[in-house]
Image 1 (cartoon, rainbow, N blue to C red):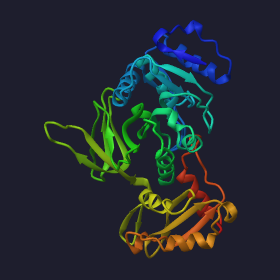
Image 2 (image 1 turned 120 degrees about the vertical axis):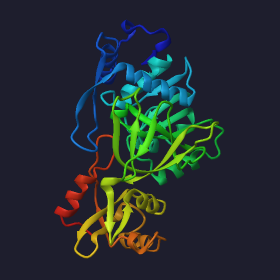
Image 3 (image 1 turned 30 degrees about the vertical axis):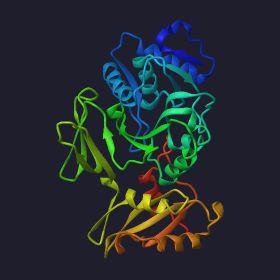
Image 4 (image 1 turned 90 degrees about the vertical axis):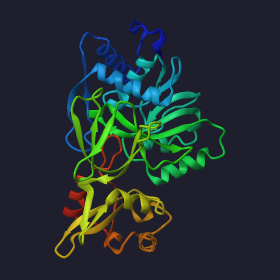
Length: 358
């Protein structure tokens, strides 16, 4: 099914699949007299919850993204995300705001792409399974979970010899900011810093955790637990702000008095080990927390054995001796949210409550 929001009439929408029915239900809710719509969180950082969001704020968010990407009336978009979550709803709101043509595709781990598309949003897993098709997409934003170094390299390799104008961005945001408030290009250029959208202000608290003030999206100042490094541009010609994500405050491991950012270490190791992995802190009388590395998959899941993987990791150049894992454990399958994000709290319970193969 395709919807042209330049010549839109809800009466002409005739859904054939369950997903198309959900799309129609959202559009009926959107064009109702209510000033709000209901949005469900994914539950990746806690219990899933449903809350109401003002339509005018969603339109503000949509305009910010469309302006940043240079989308124009009549451009084609692909919707391949669930519409019960903010990511899928915002794809439709962007299409409404910018009068785009939207191809409706049932959400799957491998979206159907068979024509040139100006704009699409996907999860990392969807991108992983669509590497042979991403050259069809002019502007692709990736959200729902962090983009791994492995996937970034695969994207770069895939598009290296392509004449495609594809631009790919990693997003930063949350349900409370109506999807994202910042984008970081990962192809054709790999940027280190996220660039915030217009009408968004950022700062940090005493922990160096990001604070977001985006009055057009949320009337409150949003305090995150994300530790960042700010980069300011104070010249008269350039007033944009950027930040580098270092890791979540909850995931900081204090080992021997050294603060270790789990996500930074994970990115380092993932450049050399083709598996999902997580660094965790295990209570220790001497160090405070002992650094352990948990790797997903059984011994036979890759060409490297557990012994070979351990040897490869211990030969890496870590920032200090405190950053070298004291234990390496293997777990067949990580607990994940519906969007594919690893549930660290659940993983902690599994690792510390159940004997793991090491």
